[in-house]
Length: 376
Image (cartoon, rainbow, N blue to C red; front, side):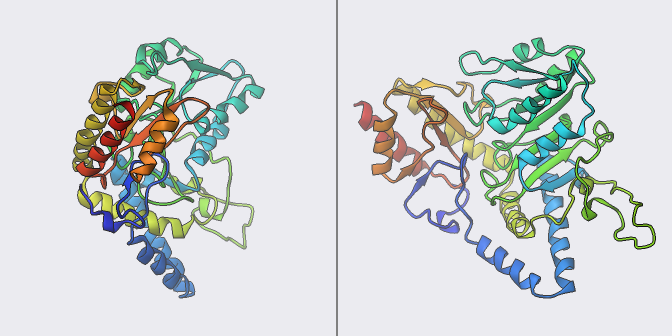
């Protein structure tokens, strides 16, 4: 355990394995929210304090992604970042986008809307629940404008190496853009965003924050041409200009993609969460999660369950997923032991167990003990 359970609201004796869906909240978030409301009461001074928190949070997000702060934007959702790219590129009939069949709907749906413009959406099919880079490369040709993939799959737990993914894409077409959803990687394993062109992440899962803010990275060199699909006062360098109300100049940094004030209260929470995560360090978190999740994977496999997550721990992060016809019995056994897991999704008898920094050896022992009772 890297962080005490009493630092979280409601954990107590709960074995919480659902950070892949909703993480528990840090108790210290209550102080962060109180600071927001105290700052908000200060009139014009309040905005300066909010902007200071915004800047501090952007610095931390950039450090998390190993990029420059001016390449980071805060939007309301990670889905907003994906849609921003979908609507910001100049598509032509015959262009194509490549996605995987096991992606989250929000990573697929924005591209489907482009079919009305003559854009083809190509789907890479999984093989035994895994997406191979060779299969991905086969779908890329001279008209492939963009590949959209998750660094870590929400559905299977498969983890891609960001550098290898980028190399596979650009070996087929160096002009093809790579958009990576890092939602299930950020806060658990390193996210080397600079290998990609666009990286998005939700913040209410592994990053221990809340809804209302998503992190978006845009590669400064390869995405300089992208124009914001929506404009507002926050997108511009100087506003308002009463003498020239029809003139504007976009910000040079990621702020150009933020048309209005960000959700400051969510940024206060995210800033607090990132501070706590970075005080521990991603390398320590990754090692802790790798140790416990390997025990979980092996214990599930020993029970004869159909594993969806790769056997190689280097190809996983915190999600360990399996299938079974005994899901109701398994989930009931977990509930009786005060163990939280994420159940079936999309009509598939699959369970996701998400291991994070607050999980303990005792949590894992309890989970595997409950599982063995089902199959004894």
